[in-house]
Image 1: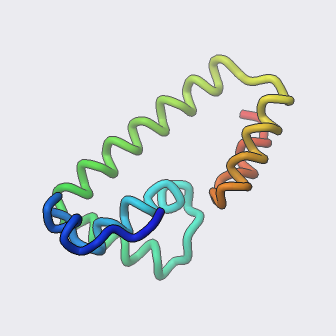
Image 2: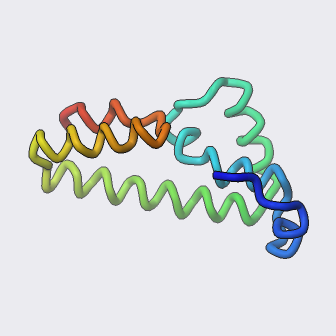
Length: 101
């Protein structure tokens, strides 16, 4: 994710820290960032209503996907392809895709 210009963030009512939350939230929710990074995001989310709502939405989405994953499963070939794509994009959760539910 490229850093948006300050004026773009301000037009959306977001700070640079909000952009950091947008960029790192899934890694945060998957416990894939440093303790210092997690604390920084946690502190911002606690003080920012927009980021609290975004976190709530993403947590709900990830729980729904996890539930479907357990219910439906996935062929190993699909899991391997997905893991490789996520790894290629720098997603810290790529190895979790390979694990069985």
